[in-house]
Structures are given as C-alpha cells and as structure tokens.
Image (cartoon, rainbow, N blue to C red):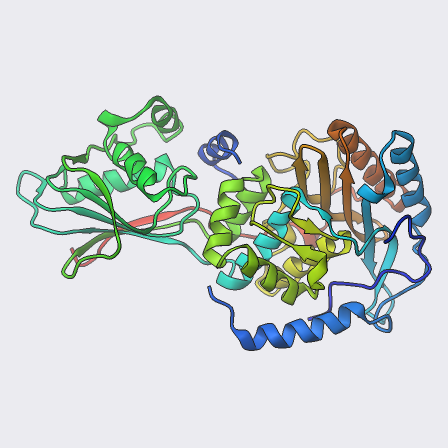
Length: 454
C-alpha cells in the first residue's frame, strides 16, 4: 500500500515550531450524546510505512501551489486574535503525472504538529474497526432459554441474552426480537432475564442498564414514552410485542450448559454502522467500536500502522474524541482518510460509504455552509473546530485537514466553509458527485431470525 503520510515540504513556510438512513436511526442518533492485532503485520507495516512517510525521495517536496491561500486563511484568523500555534492546515493531492507514487503537498501549516482532533478521532476509530473486522462484519446478539415451554406460552426457566458488542441495538430491535419470541410461542418468562457478554442497548455501555431497557422493550405494556415514539415510526400494522419477564434482570459470566438457542439478531454491516456514527458524530457508538477493537491504544496502534503515521502525530485517550488529549496532526488526519479509501476500494466501496456526502446526507454537516460537492468529517469541542475530508475539483481531488483552536466556533466553521468553497471555485467545481465518490454499500439493515432447528 502506498504511504498516506507525505513529508512536509522543505520549502514551506513554518509559522511556529512546526449514507441511505432509516428515520428511526436518525431519531436515535440525534437523541443521544454523543481484538486482536496480529503482531507480524503490525511490525512489518509500522516499519515500512514509517520509512515511507518520512522519506523525501518518494514524495513531492516543492512549495505548494495553494500556500498563498493558506497564508491568507491564517492571516484572517490572526486578525481575529487567534494564535497561529493553535491552527493547523494540510492540503494535498495525488500527482497526476505518470509517477503515481508521489503526493503533491499543496499547502500546509504545522502539518506534522499534533493538535486537538475532537471528533476527527472517529476517523482513526473507523479505520481500525474496518481493518479489524472488515466492512461487511455484523455484530451478533443471541437469545437462549433454559427450561421447558408450556402450551400456554410460559417459559419455565430463564431467558438469556449473549451480547457481542452491537453498537446499534435500539428500541426497534427489541420490538423485533419480542415479536419473534411471541411467534415462537413465548408470552411469559417465569425466571430471570440474564445478560452475558457486552450487550448494549440505546447506546448505553452499562450492561445491567441495557438489560433493564431490553426488559421494557420486549413488553409493550412496560414501554416508556420514548419507546412509544420509536414504535410510531414503524410500518402500520407492526405488532406490539408482549414478553413478560416475571423475574429480575441480572448479569452473568457465561451461558449455562444445555441452554437452547432461540434466535439470533445481526446488526447492520459495519460499513453502515460507521457511516451512521460519523454522520451524527455519535460518541457512544465510537467508544463501543473502539472497545470492540481493543481500546484506544489498540485503535491508535492499528491506525498508525496502516496509514504510516509516526507515533507522536497520533495520540489517543479514547475512540470518540472527547477531550483535548486526543491529538492528531493535520497530515495524519489526511493519511487516515486516504487509508480508509484504499481499504474500501479493495472491497468495491468508497469513502462516501463511511462519511458524509455534503448536500446528500443528513447529520451534523447538513446545516453547515460548505461546498456543494464534498466528503468530510467534522469535530467540535468547547474551543476546538476541525474539519477533514476530500474536496473534488475539475483539476483533481484535494485532500484537506483544517484544525482550529480558539473560542469562536461559529466563526471557525464559517471560515472553513469559505476557504474550501474558494478552493473549489478556483479549481473548478464538479456539477455532480464524481463517479469515484458515489456510495456503493448495499444492504444496510439488521437481521433477526429464529433458530431453524426449532
């Protein structure tokens, strides 16, 4: 894989030290805040890509053609009182000449300096999850039973739930499971609802709390108002499940021998999960996916290895971006996005399958004043505004990262949009989204099925 980390141009000025969504998922994602690594390939990739990223011989090092625009952008920020040391910019494109292994650095400021990334951290989480699981991976939740089922529909035992880290199990999934249990003949459980493993519901990482939410979701007579709201978004005629749990909700360490599998629920494919996470910048989903990979350190290790990022340019404390301690350099942000595009291209997908297409997708960017043709991810903290992605133009794709620190978040967002719009206007704006950036993911739904042997 080509290195995604070009060296900063030697001649560049240094200003300091140097997807289709269901309405129910939209409602949920707006409403909430929000395993392994084979050592052999880590070692090989880390060494090879790091050498590539730091080598001046394999990349263009001339002064960037867009450096004057970068200088103007920074001067405008400085004129509003924002220190250059809190700002970062990186602009690059692939060399259109036959020497395709070169990367043209078009302009930069503090390109290799790690800065607070905010939710651009989710780009690293996206890359690590896609590499670890694959774009079509589905997280499975299994329901099992102990004890016999009477003719009256009473399960004389416990109902067991084995969770495997599904980050998008919400009210409607509980409704679907309840209806299938009813179809199997289960109306009442004399025992407990027992949760094993990492079962999450409604973006809660508290397993016991998720179990309590599931108990409510399985029985329409116990629904809180928010569950009723979600049910109203389902097709007319959808049954209201009634699975009454007479016992308590408890957490156990393992499934008992002899438990009978009742049904399996599969999440949407991972590529759709990360698209939803990035569209709404959902912090809970990001933390769940980071945990599934092995935690923030593992996310950083995988991302650095694949994208060829020096360790000091990508430092993470979590998978969501909450906290200024998550720091990524501007050029590393671009390297992460290009690595995701390379990975997805091998699967017949594109970056637009994982991130927002401005003007087409809903989410946190739909109200931003941005160029009409753009694929991007944003990030926001109290004094941080970041934006990174790819800007298609008539002269080629400009990969960019803009990282701003200071107190005027609205002003930063406005200036980011104006800066990118001017670049696209100067280089020629496509009339439609180029073919190479059209989303291609197919099935985006979850699946629930009864055990065929029952």
